[in-house]
Length: 127
Image 1 (cartoon, rainbow, N blue to C red):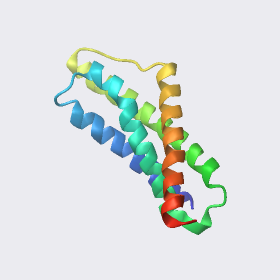
Image 2: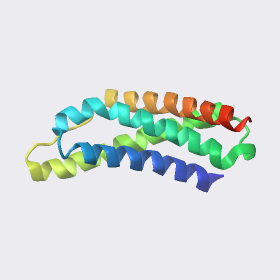
Image 3: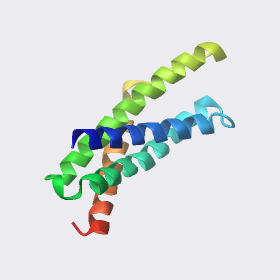
Image 4: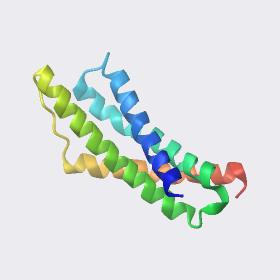
């Protein structure tokens, strides 16, 4: 159960990072920060769906576990984006810092959409 949940988290974080890097090729870094919650929300839903898809009958409290997993995905995405922006920003001449409000937004968006993705998977698989 732990390996499946870790895979779900890293799929969500990786998807957010891939979308952010892809969009950074044609959108300025400052504007990506406003679009990033949409990417995190989409990948949070994928995290919740993937969790239920893999664990189906073995998970006991799906809503709670999916929200916790979504909050973890939002937190790890925040850390990865902050690290990547500071690393890449030093080469580009500008450094951006995400603040605590961004962390709470990422956690809330990812937690809610992970719950909704898990709920969608429960309806799809008739659990």
